[in-house]
Length: 476
Ligand SMILES: Cc1cc2nc3c(=O)[nH]c(=O)nc-3n(C[C@H](O)[C@H](O)[C@H](O)COP(=O)(O)OP(=O)(O)OC[C@H]3O[C@@H](n4cnc5c(N)ncnc54)[C@H](O)[C@@H]3O)c2cc1C
Image (cartoon, rainbow, N blue to C red; front, side, top):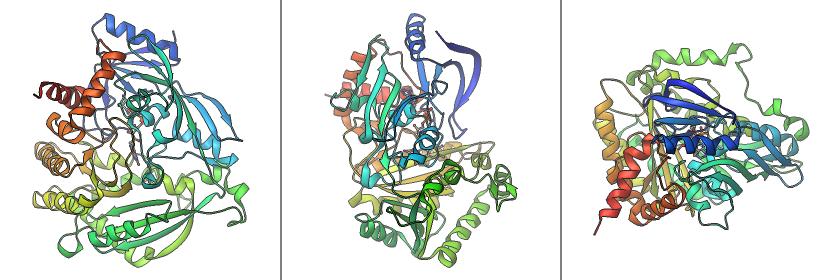
């Protein structure tokens, strides 16, 4: 067995606001996963799985944490078919870097390239193209899983259990390998259209008009704007280019051309940039930053079209390394609400007005369009998501958690859901209302089969999902 057991250490969610002490076991080979699960069962310990640790809250934190990021080999990549098979700890960054010189790109990527394939599958991540291509689960050809029951299985979409493990947030088994169908890109860049919407109506109108033609849609929204300007946004729509649309495709598909620059204007190391933002890390400063971003959109980006490499367009959040430190020392939580299309406009308005009334306005809001999918505990639905980053301080913590609970009530009443990858606050009653008793009980049936001793338990699962399952069971 090749595993390293560390001393007890502090393990935090990506947002640095939740987490605590844990025993961390770092694995380097799949066989060790079974051994550690066995050890945990015999010693009455529970285990949370962790990939890149990019989940904002407590999804990858628990009593014993198995860190899978060291199991990161790309096992096979076929440049003719674009099928890649890798160990679960391989990151999106490793995959795109291996694939892009051959004209392939991951079909779904998150706003950062740091997630592992295992973490991406377990949360069934989505990209800015979710409304067109669905979540990453729709592009997985197979996953290899080690279950706490001792069973090892290769699952494909032909197997119903595949749809529970993908989206199951690491609570049914350890994904050790992932096989993914990449997508062909004929050009090295995307054609990007930047435009603005003055309010929520403008924002939703744009998305509805362009969802049939755009390949990617995303909007940044100024949550500080009130009244007639509520929901004003800077929107980016992007379109794939075709072979022959650019002169230098071969060169521009090389990794170094797709890589994000490490210096601003070729001079200032970007690793320093979060320090420049730090003086603005208060509500007044962030109001200014959002205002500045809005006006730069109106004055500079309005209806501008330009070309951007895949790397630069997709991984905007990696542009400023360590930007989350702007939120230190309290960290941040993200609330990402997914709401059916016909209710989304009204619910987003209510969410924004609620936080404005309470003086707890989020500092960064992002809107995306989604489609429904077949995964058991997926966040995906035919509608919109609003992701909101809230700064956590000692003074606002209780009020912020209450705000999230009240926002959850609105989202649940509209038939919406939250996303476990971003969550740090959701209560069991909201999970029950959002996912419904049938899905939760179906998950419990799978758990009984895959992990009868209940070894896999993240802090999130214990806080929100396990009690929701118990509530579903006790319903008449
Ligand atoms: C800046 C930033 C931007 C983001 N943008 C997006 C976005 O655009 N779209 C989106 O969907 N998400 C986004 N995310 C969230 C991120 O994609 C998910 O949290 C993803 O699950 C992270 O993968 P990870 O490897 O870091 O997993 P972790 O955060 O370590 O774990 C995530 C979950 O997967 C489980 N898990 C991890 N590895 C395995 C495994 N091998 N087998 C079984 N279970 C496992 C864990 O137990 C946990 O429940 C973003 C996150 C950040 C920090």
